Image (cartoon, rainbow, N blue to C red; front, top):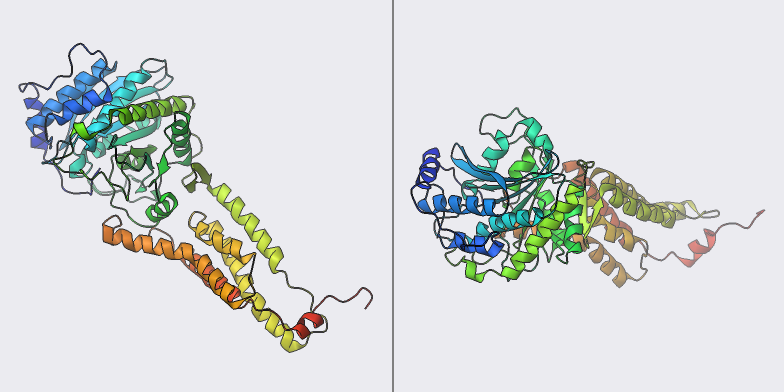
Length: 490
Protein backbone atom coordinates (compact mmCIF):
# COMPACT_ATOMS: atom_id res chain seq x y z
CA UNK A 1 0.00 0.00 0.00
CA UNK A 2 1.40 3.33 -0.90
CA UNK A 3 0.88 7.01 -1.74
CA UNK A 4 2.22 7.03 -5.37
CA UNK A 5 5.85 8.01 -6.03
CA UNK A 6 8.81 7.41 -8.43
CA UNK A 7 10.00 4.75 -10.92
CA UNK A 8 12.56 1.99 -10.32
CA UNK A 9 15.46 1.39 -12.67
CA UNK A 10 15.69 -1.68 -14.85
CA UNK A 11 19.34 -2.13 -13.97
CA UNK A 12 18.66 -2.43 -10.25
CA UNK A 13 16.10 -5.18 -10.86
CA UNK A 14 18.49 -7.23 -12.98
CA UNK A 15 21.29 -6.86 -10.42
CA UNK A 16 18.91 -8.00 -7.68
CA UNK A 17 17.99 -11.16 -9.55
CA UNK A 18 21.65 -11.90 -10.37
CA UNK A 19 22.53 -11.51 -6.72
CA UNK A 20 19.87 -14.07 -5.83
CA UNK A 21 22.09 -16.70 -7.40
CA UNK A 22 25.13 -15.92 -5.27
CA UNK A 23 23.76 -14.55 -2.00
CA UNK A 24 22.42 -17.26 0.36
CA UNK A 25 18.70 -16.97 0.82
CA UNK A 26 17.02 -17.04 4.20
CA UNK A 27 15.46 -20.50 4.42
CA UNK A 28 12.26 -21.42 6.21
CA UNK A 29 12.08 -23.89 9.07
CA UNK A 30 13.60 -27.15 7.94
CA UNK A 31 11.38 -30.19 7.69
CA UNK A 32 8.13 -28.19 7.43
CA UNK A 33 6.43 -29.24 4.21
CA UNK A 34 3.89 -26.42 4.13
CA UNK A 35 4.92 -23.14 5.78
CA UNK A 36 2.27 -21.18 7.65
CA UNK A 37 1.55 -17.55 6.83
CA UNK A 38 3.39 -16.44 9.95
CA UNK A 39 6.46 -18.54 9.04
CA UNK A 40 6.67 -16.82 5.66
CA UNK A 41 6.21 -13.27 6.97
CA UNK A 42 8.70 -13.91 9.76
CA UNK A 43 11.27 -15.13 7.26
CA UNK A 44 10.74 -12.08 5.05
CA UNK A 45 10.92 -9.56 7.90
CA UNK A 46 14.17 -11.09 9.24
CA UNK A 47 15.80 -10.18 5.93
CA UNK A 48 15.32 -6.51 6.80
CA UNK A 49 14.20 -3.80 4.37
CA UNK A 50 13.73 -5.06 0.79
CA UNK A 51 13.82 -2.05 -1.56
CA UNK A 52 14.04 -2.78 -5.29
CA UNK A 53 17.47 -3.95 -6.46
CA UNK A 54 18.76 -4.72 -2.95
CA UNK A 55 20.44 -8.02 -1.94
CA UNK A 56 17.71 -8.46 0.69
CA UNK A 57 15.03 -8.37 -2.01
CA UNK A 58 16.97 -10.96 -4.00
CA UNK A 59 17.04 -13.25 -0.96
CA UNK A 60 13.32 -12.58 -0.44
CA UNK A 61 12.66 -13.75 -4.00
CA UNK A 62 14.42 -17.05 -3.22
CA UNK A 63 12.48 -17.46 0.00
CA UNK A 64 9.14 -16.85 -1.69
CA UNK A 65 9.86 -19.22 -4.56
CA UNK A 66 10.79 -21.91 -2.04
CA UNK A 67 7.59 -21.25 -0.06
CA UNK A 68 5.47 -21.46 -3.22
CA UNK A 69 6.92 -24.85 -4.11
CA UNK A 70 6.47 -26.17 -0.60
CA UNK A 71 2.85 -24.97 -0.67
CA UNK A 72 2.24 -27.29 -3.62
CA UNK A 73 2.35 -24.80 -6.49
CA UNK A 74 4.08 -25.54 -9.78
CA UNK A 75 5.61 -23.52 -12.61
CA UNK A 76 7.27 -21.29 -10.00
CA UNK A 77 9.30 -18.57 -11.68
CA UNK A 78 10.33 -14.93 -11.58
CA UNK A 79 9.59 -12.75 -14.60
CA UNK A 80 11.62 -9.62 -15.33
CA UNK A 81 10.14 -6.46 -16.75
CA UNK A 82 11.67 -3.06 -17.33
CA UNK A 83 12.12 -1.69 -13.82
CA UNK A 84 10.12 -4.42 -12.08
CA UNK A 85 9.57 -8.14 -11.64
CA UNK A 86 6.93 -10.64 -10.51
CA UNK A 87 7.18 -14.04 -8.83
CA UNK A 88 4.52 -16.54 -9.89
CA UNK A 89 3.33 -19.96 -8.88
CA UNK A 90 0.41 -21.95 -10.29
CA UNK A 91 -2.06 -24.37 -8.71
CA UNK A 92 -3.60 -26.13 -11.73
CA UNK A 93 -7.36 -26.52 -11.90
CA UNK A 94 -9.63 -28.50 -14.21
CA UNK A 95 -9.79 -25.55 -16.67
CA UNK A 96 -7.50 -22.74 -17.79
CA UNK A 97 -9.79 -20.12 -16.24
CA UNK A 98 -7.91 -18.39 -13.42
CA UNK A 99 -8.32 -16.76 -10.03
CA UNK A 100 -5.33 -14.64 -8.98
CA UNK A 101 -4.00 -14.03 -5.46
CA UNK A 102 -1.54 -11.15 -5.34
CA UNK A 103 0.66 -9.16 -2.98
CA UNK A 104 3.96 -7.26 -3.08
CA UNK A 105 7.29 -8.20 -1.48
CA UNK A 106 9.23 -4.95 -1.85
CA UNK A 107 9.48 -2.42 0.99
CA UNK A 108 10.58 1.15 1.55
CA UNK A 109 14.23 1.62 2.47
CA UNK A 110 13.86 1.75 6.27
CA UNK A 111 11.14 -0.81 6.98
CA UNK A 112 11.36 -4.61 7.34
CA UNK A 113 7.87 -4.67 5.82
CA UNK A 114 6.29 -7.45 7.87
CA UNK A 115 2.80 -6.00 7.58
CA UNK A 116 3.47 -3.98 4.40
CA UNK A 117 3.41 -6.32 2.61
CA UNK A 118 5.12 -9.49 3.75
CA UNK A 119 1.80 -10.41 5.34
CA UNK A 120 -0.07 -10.24 2.02
CA UNK A 121 2.50 -12.47 0.29
CA UNK A 122 2.39 -14.91 3.21
CA UNK A 123 -1.40 -15.21 3.31
CA UNK A 124 -1.54 -15.66 -0.48
CA UNK A 125 0.87 -18.61 -0.23
CA UNK A 126 -0.87 -20.12 2.82
CA UNK A 127 -4.30 -19.82 1.17
CA UNK A 128 -2.96 -21.52 -1.97
CA UNK A 129 -1.63 -24.35 0.20
CA UNK A 130 -5.08 -24.74 1.75
CA UNK A 131 -6.70 -24.74 -1.71
CA UNK A 132 -4.31 -27.47 -2.86
CA UNK A 133 -6.13 -29.91 -0.55
CA UNK A 134 -9.26 -30.00 -2.73
CA UNK A 135 -9.79 -30.12 -6.52
CA UNK A 136 -10.77 -26.86 -8.18
CA UNK A 137 -12.29 -25.95 -11.50
CA UNK A 138 -10.25 -22.74 -11.81
CA UNK A 139 -6.49 -22.53 -11.87
CA UNK A 140 -5.16 -20.47 -8.96
CA UNK A 141 -2.22 -18.21 -9.76
CA UNK A 142 -0.22 -16.53 -6.99
CA UNK A 143 1.59 -13.40 -8.24
CA UNK A 144 3.92 -11.43 -5.95
CA UNK A 145 5.12 -8.09 -7.29
CA UNK A 146 7.98 -5.77 -6.55
CA UNK A 147 8.02 -2.07 -7.44
CA UNK A 148 4.80 -1.38 -5.53
CA UNK A 149 6.38 1.22 -3.29
CA UNK A 150 7.76 3.12 -6.31
CA UNK A 151 4.52 3.43 -8.21
CA UNK A 152 2.79 0.01 -8.52
CA UNK A 153 5.41 -0.85 -11.14
CA UNK A 154 5.38 -4.64 -10.83
CA UNK A 155 1.62 -5.08 -11.10
CA UNK A 156 1.46 -2.52 -13.89
CA UNK A 157 4.10 -4.31 -15.96
CA UNK A 158 2.62 -7.77 -15.29
CA UNK A 159 -0.93 -6.72 -16.22
CA UNK A 160 0.26 -4.90 -19.35
CA UNK A 161 2.23 -7.97 -20.50
CA UNK A 162 -0.81 -10.26 -20.42
CA UNK A 163 -2.28 -11.02 -23.80
CA UNK A 164 -6.02 -10.23 -24.18
CA UNK A 165 -6.98 -13.91 -24.16
CA UNK A 166 -5.22 -14.45 -20.84
CA UNK A 167 -6.93 -11.43 -19.29
CA UNK A 168 -10.29 -12.81 -20.39
CA UNK A 169 -9.54 -16.08 -18.60
CA UNK A 170 -8.97 -14.37 -15.23
CA UNK A 171 -12.18 -14.35 -13.24
CA UNK A 172 -10.88 -12.13 -10.43
CA UNK A 173 -7.85 -10.94 -8.48
CA UNK A 174 -7.77 -10.81 -4.68
CA UNK A 175 -4.94 -8.47 -3.76
CA UNK A 176 -3.77 -8.96 -0.17
CA UNK A 177 -2.27 -5.98 1.62
CA UNK A 178 -1.25 -5.42 5.25
CA UNK A 179 -2.92 -8.33 7.06
CA UNK A 180 -2.53 -9.41 10.68
CA UNK A 181 -2.20 -6.07 12.46
CA UNK A 182 -3.70 -6.80 15.93
CA UNK A 183 -4.90 -3.21 16.46
CA UNK A 184 -7.01 -3.20 13.31
CA UNK A 185 -10.65 -2.10 13.77
CA UNK A 186 -11.65 -4.90 11.41
CA UNK A 187 -11.01 -6.66 8.10
CA UNK A 188 -11.71 -4.35 5.19
CA UNK A 189 -12.58 -4.76 1.53
CA UNK A 190 -11.32 -2.00 -0.75
CA UNK A 191 -13.09 -1.67 -4.11
CA UNK A 192 -10.89 1.12 -5.43
CA UNK A 193 -12.07 3.08 -8.50
CA UNK A 194 -9.81 3.35 -11.57
CA UNK A 195 -9.95 4.49 -15.16
CA UNK A 196 -9.83 1.79 -17.82
CA UNK A 197 -7.16 1.58 -20.49
CA UNK A 198 -8.59 2.21 -23.94
CA UNK A 199 -5.57 1.13 -25.98
CA UNK A 200 -5.16 4.67 -27.33
CA UNK A 201 -2.87 5.93 -24.55
CA UNK A 202 0.72 6.90 -25.25
CA UNK A 203 3.39 4.43 -24.04
CA UNK A 204 3.61 4.79 -20.29
CA UNK A 205 0.56 7.07 -20.22
CA UNK A 206 -2.22 6.90 -17.69
CA UNK A 207 -5.49 5.18 -18.58
CA UNK A 208 -7.98 7.53 -20.20
CA UNK A 209 -11.15 5.45 -20.26
CA UNK A 210 -14.25 5.57 -18.10
CA UNK A 211 -13.98 5.43 -14.32
CA UNK A 212 -15.12 2.10 -12.91
CA UNK A 213 -15.19 0.15 -9.67
CA UNK A 214 -14.85 -3.60 -9.12
CA UNK A 215 -18.13 -5.36 -9.97
CA UNK A 216 -20.80 -5.88 -7.34
CA UNK A 217 -20.86 -9.65 -7.81
CA UNK A 218 -17.22 -9.91 -6.68
CA UNK A 219 -17.85 -7.74 -3.62
CA UNK A 220 -20.91 -9.85 -2.79
CA UNK A 221 -18.93 -13.12 -3.06
CA UNK A 222 -16.20 -11.82 -0.73
CA UNK A 223 -18.65 -10.53 1.88
CA UNK A 224 -20.66 -13.76 1.91
CA UNK A 225 -17.49 -15.88 2.13
CA UNK A 226 -16.20 -13.87 5.07
CA UNK A 227 -19.49 -14.25 6.91
CA UNK A 228 -19.50 -18.01 6.26
CA UNK A 229 -16.17 -18.51 8.06
CA UNK A 230 -16.78 -15.99 10.84
CA UNK A 231 -14.61 -13.25 9.33
CA UNK A 232 -17.06 -10.49 8.27
CA UNK A 233 -15.50 -7.72 6.21
CA UNK A 234 -16.51 -4.07 6.02
CA UNK A 235 -16.41 -1.98 2.89
CA UNK A 236 -13.88 0.89 2.59
CA UNK A 237 -13.68 1.54 6.34
CA UNK A 238 -14.92 -0.51 9.31
CA UNK A 239 -16.24 2.52 11.20
CA UNK A 240 -17.55 4.84 8.47
CA UNK A 241 -18.27 2.44 5.64
CA UNK A 242 -21.08 4.25 3.79
CA UNK A 243 -19.43 7.64 4.10
CA UNK A 244 -16.07 6.45 2.77
CA UNK A 245 -17.73 4.58 -0.10
CA UNK A 246 -19.34 7.85 -1.18
CA UNK A 247 -16.06 9.75 -0.77
CA UNK A 248 -14.07 7.37 -2.97
CA UNK A 249 -16.79 7.51 -5.63
CA UNK A 250 -16.73 11.31 -5.57
CA UNK A 251 -13.03 12.21 -5.50
CA UNK A 252 -9.61 10.87 -6.41
CA UNK A 253 -8.27 9.09 -3.32
CA UNK A 254 -4.60 8.63 -2.45
CA UNK A 255 -4.77 4.94 -1.67
CA UNK A 256 -2.70 3.03 -4.19
CA UNK A 257 -2.85 -0.77 -4.37
CA UNK A 258 -1.79 -3.31 -6.99
CA UNK A 259 -5.40 -4.28 -7.64
CA UNK A 260 -5.83 -0.95 -9.44
CA UNK A 261 -3.54 -1.95 -12.31
CA UNK A 262 -5.38 -5.20 -12.90
CA UNK A 263 -8.79 -3.54 -12.78
CA UNK A 264 -7.58 -0.87 -15.22
CA UNK A 265 -6.86 -3.71 -17.68
CA UNK A 266 -10.38 -5.08 -17.32
CA UNK A 267 -9.67 -7.76 -14.68
CA UNK A 268 -12.10 -7.64 -11.71
CA UNK A 269 -9.82 -6.90 -8.75
CA UNK A 270 -10.15 -5.79 -5.13
CA UNK A 271 -7.79 -5.33 -2.19
CA UNK A 272 -8.32 -7.01 1.19
CA UNK A 273 -6.62 -5.41 4.19
CA UNK A 274 -6.55 -4.81 7.93
CA UNK A 275 -5.87 -1.13 7.22
CA UNK A 276 -8.38 1.33 5.85
CA UNK A 277 -8.79 4.96 4.83
CA UNK A 278 -9.05 6.15 8.43
CA UNK A 279 -7.28 3.34 10.31
CA UNK A 280 -3.74 2.76 9.04
CA UNK A 281 -1.25 0.50 10.80
CA UNK A 282 0.86 2.90 12.93
CA UNK A 283 4.06 1.10 11.89
CA UNK A 284 3.38 1.79 8.21
CA UNK A 285 6.73 2.45 6.47
CA UNK A 286 8.58 2.42 9.81
CA UNK A 287 11.40 0.34 11.23
CA UNK A 288 8.98 -1.07 13.80
CA UNK A 289 7.03 -3.02 11.13
CA UNK A 290 8.35 -6.40 12.35
CA UNK A 291 6.78 -9.86 12.40
CA UNK A 292 6.71 -10.10 16.21
CA UNK A 293 3.91 -7.54 16.42
CA UNK A 294 1.62 -9.39 13.98
CA UNK A 295 -1.07 -11.74 15.25
CA UNK A 296 -0.54 -15.32 13.94
CA UNK A 297 -4.14 -16.24 14.74
CA UNK A 298 -5.41 -13.26 12.75
CA UNK A 299 -3.28 -14.31 9.79
CA UNK A 300 -4.80 -17.81 10.01
CA UNK A 301 -8.28 -16.29 9.92
CA UNK A 302 -7.33 -14.28 6.85
CA UNK A 303 -5.98 -17.44 5.23
CA UNK A 304 -9.26 -19.24 5.88
CA UNK A 305 -11.33 -16.32 4.56
CA UNK A 306 -9.27 -15.96 1.37
CA UNK A 307 -9.43 -19.71 0.66
CA UNK A 308 -13.20 -19.69 1.29
CA UNK A 309 -13.61 -16.80 -1.16
CA UNK A 310 -11.66 -18.61 -3.87
CA UNK A 311 -13.77 -21.73 -3.39
CA UNK A 312 -16.95 -19.69 -3.68
CA UNK A 313 -15.69 -17.97 -6.83
CA UNK A 314 -14.62 -21.34 -8.20
CA UNK A 315 -18.28 -22.39 -8.40
CA UNK A 316 -18.94 -19.71 -11.01
CA UNK A 317 -18.92 -20.86 -14.61
CA UNK A 318 -17.94 -17.34 -15.68
CA UNK A 319 -18.21 -13.73 -14.58
CA UNK A 320 -21.80 -12.61 -13.88
CA UNK A 321 -23.17 -9.41 -15.37
CA UNK A 322 -20.94 -6.56 -14.23
CA UNK A 323 -22.50 -3.74 -12.21
CA UNK A 324 -20.38 -1.10 -10.48
CA UNK A 325 -23.21 1.14 -9.30
CA UNK A 326 -23.77 -0.25 -5.80
CA UNK A 327 -23.51 0.57 -2.13
CA UNK A 328 -22.69 -1.84 0.68
CA UNK A 329 -24.92 -1.33 3.73
CA UNK A 330 -24.90 -3.65 6.75
CA UNK A 331 -22.93 -6.26 4.82
CA UNK A 332 -25.35 -6.35 1.90
CA UNK A 333 -24.61 -5.15 -1.62
CA UNK A 334 -27.40 -2.85 -2.83
CA UNK A 335 -27.16 -2.68 -6.60
CA UNK A 336 -28.52 0.14 -8.73
CA UNK A 337 -31.87 -1.61 -9.10
CA UNK A 338 -32.17 -2.07 -5.31
CA UNK A 339 -31.50 1.62 -4.65
CA UNK A 340 -33.96 2.62 -7.36
CA UNK A 341 -36.65 0.37 -5.86
CA UNK A 342 -36.24 1.89 -2.40
CA UNK A 343 -36.16 5.40 -3.81
CA UNK A 344 -39.18 4.80 -6.02
CA UNK A 345 -41.26 3.54 -3.08
CA UNK A 346 -40.46 6.73 -1.18
CA UNK A 347 -41.15 8.82 -4.26
CA UNK A 348 -44.60 7.26 -4.76
CA UNK A 349 -45.40 7.83 -1.07
CA UNK A 350 -44.36 11.47 -1.45
CA UNK A 351 -46.52 11.87 -4.56
CA UNK A 352 -49.63 10.63 -2.73
CA UNK A 353 -48.72 12.65 0.34
CA UNK A 354 -48.38 15.81 -1.76
CA UNK A 355 -51.59 15.59 -3.82
CA UNK A 356 -53.51 18.83 -3.13
CA UNK A 357 -57.16 18.73 -2.16
CA UNK A 358 -60.04 20.24 -4.11
CA UNK A 359 -60.43 23.93 -3.51
CA UNK A 360 -64.06 24.65 -4.46
CA UNK A 361 -65.15 27.91 -3.05
CA UNK A 362 -61.61 29.16 -2.40
CA UNK A 363 -60.78 32.64 -3.52
CA UNK A 364 -58.16 33.34 -6.18
CA UNK A 365 -55.78 34.60 -3.48
CA UNK A 366 -56.22 31.42 -1.46
CA UNK A 367 -55.59 29.24 -4.51
CA UNK A 368 -52.42 31.19 -5.33
CA UNK A 369 -51.17 30.82 -1.76
CA UNK A 370 -51.80 27.07 -1.83
CA UNK A 371 -49.99 26.67 -5.15
CA UNK A 372 -46.97 28.49 -3.76
CA UNK A 373 -46.93 26.10 -0.82
CA UNK A 374 -47.32 23.11 -3.11
CA UNK A 375 -44.66 24.06 -5.68
CA UNK A 376 -41.46 23.38 -3.61
CA UNK A 377 -42.73 19.90 -2.69
CA UNK A 378 -43.49 19.21 -6.34
CA UNK A 379 -40.00 20.36 -7.37
CA UNK A 380 -38.45 18.21 -4.61
CA UNK A 381 -40.25 15.11 -5.88
CA UNK A 382 -39.23 15.75 -9.48
CA UNK A 383 -35.57 16.38 -8.60
CA UNK A 384 -35.49 13.36 -6.27
CA UNK A 385 -36.67 11.10 -9.08
CA UNK A 386 -34.20 12.57 -11.58
CA UNK A 387 -31.31 12.27 -9.08
CA UNK A 388 -32.15 8.62 -8.45
CA UNK A 389 -32.07 7.92 -12.18
CA UNK A 390 -28.89 9.91 -12.85
CA UNK A 391 -26.78 9.01 -9.80
CA UNK A 392 -28.50 6.37 -7.65
CA UNK A 393 -25.57 5.83 -5.28
CA UNK A 394 -25.12 9.51 -4.43
CA UNK A 395 -28.89 10.03 -4.35
CA UNK A 396 -29.01 7.97 -1.13
CA UNK A 397 -28.00 11.23 0.57
CA UNK A 398 -31.53 12.43 -0.24
CA UNK A 399 -33.38 9.45 1.23
CA UNK A 400 -33.44 10.69 4.86
CA UNK A 401 -34.93 13.96 3.62
CA UNK A 402 -37.53 12.01 1.63
CA UNK A 403 -38.56 10.08 4.75
CA UNK A 404 -38.79 13.27 6.80
CA UNK A 405 -40.87 14.93 4.05
CA UNK A 406 -43.50 12.23 4.58
CA UNK A 407 -44.02 13.46 8.14
CA UNK A 408 -44.01 17.28 7.89
CA UNK A 409 -44.17 19.03 11.26
CA UNK A 410 -46.41 22.02 11.95
CA UNK A 411 -44.54 23.75 14.76
CA UNK A 412 -41.83 26.20 13.73
CA UNK A 413 -39.17 24.69 16.02
CA UNK A 414 -39.81 21.23 14.60
CA UNK A 415 -39.64 22.55 11.03
CA UNK A 416 -36.15 23.92 11.75
CA UNK A 417 -35.15 20.56 13.22
CA UNK A 418 -36.60 18.72 10.18
CA UNK A 419 -34.60 20.91 7.81
CA UNK A 420 -31.41 20.35 9.79
CA UNK A 421 -31.90 16.56 9.90
CA UNK A 422 -32.68 16.40 6.19
CA UNK A 423 -29.56 18.40 5.26
CA UNK A 424 -27.30 16.58 7.75
CA UNK A 425 -26.19 13.77 5.35
CA UNK A 426 -25.05 16.37 2.80
CA UNK A 427 -23.17 18.35 5.47
CA UNK A 428 -21.40 15.25 6.80
CA UNK A 429 -20.45 14.20 3.28
CA UNK A 430 -19.00 17.63 2.45
CA UNK A 431 -17.06 17.72 5.73
CA UNK A 432 -15.67 14.25 4.96
CA UNK A 433 -14.41 15.45 1.57
CA UNK A 434 -12.79 18.52 3.10
CA UNK A 435 -11.33 16.50 5.97
CA UNK A 436 -10.01 13.95 3.50
CA UNK A 437 -8.11 16.67 1.66
CA UNK A 438 -6.46 17.92 4.87
CA UNK A 439 -5.70 14.34 5.97
CA UNK A 440 -4.04 13.57 2.63
CA UNK A 441 -6.57 10.85 1.75
CA UNK A 442 -8.32 12.87 -0.97
CA UNK A 443 -6.40 14.59 -3.75
CA UNK A 444 -7.41 18.25 -4.15
CA UNK A 445 -6.21 18.13 -7.77
CA UNK A 446 -8.20 15.11 -8.86
CA UNK A 447 -11.37 17.04 -9.49
CA UNK A 448 -14.92 16.01 -8.76
CA UNK A 449 -15.60 12.49 -10.04
CA UNK A 450 -19.37 12.94 -10.18
CA UNK A 451 -21.14 14.44 -13.19
CA UNK A 452 -22.12 18.06 -12.75
CA UNK A 453 -25.70 17.29 -13.77
CA UNK A 454 -25.96 14.83 -10.88
CA UNK A 455 -24.48 17.38 -8.49
CA UNK A 456 -26.97 20.05 -9.56
CA UNK A 457 -29.92 17.66 -9.27
CA UNK A 458 -28.95 16.59 -5.74
CA UNK A 459 -28.23 20.13 -4.53
CA UNK A 460 -31.46 21.36 -6.12
CA UNK A 461 -33.42 18.59 -4.40
CA UNK A 462 -31.96 19.56 -1.01
CA UNK A 463 -32.88 23.20 -1.62
CA UNK A 464 -36.43 22.25 -2.58
CA UNK A 465 -36.70 20.07 0.53
CA UNK A 466 -35.67 22.98 2.74
CA UNK A 467 -38.21 25.30 1.09
CA UNK A 468 -41.12 22.87 1.24
CA UNK A 469 -40.44 22.13 4.93
CA UNK A 470 -40.12 25.80 5.87
CA UNK A 471 -43.36 26.68 4.03
CA UNK A 472 -45.33 23.88 5.64
CA UNK A 473 -47.36 26.16 7.93
CA UNK A 474 -50.86 25.46 9.23
CA UNK A 475 -53.62 26.81 6.98
CA UNK A 476 -55.99 29.46 8.28
CA UNK A 477 -59.22 27.94 9.57
CA UNK A 478 -61.30 29.90 7.07
CA UNK A 479 -59.26 28.55 4.16
CA UNK A 480 -59.36 24.99 5.49
CA UNK A 481 -63.12 25.15 5.63
CA UNK A 482 -63.53 26.70 2.21
CA UNK A 483 -61.08 24.29 0.57
CA UNK A 484 -62.69 21.11 1.89
CA UNK A 485 -64.30 18.84 -0.74
CA UNK A 486 -67.92 19.68 -1.65
CA UNK A 487 -70.74 17.36 -0.67
CA UNK A 488 -72.07 15.07 -3.43
CA UNK A 489 -74.65 16.82 -5.58
CA UNK A 490 -73.62 20.31 -4.51
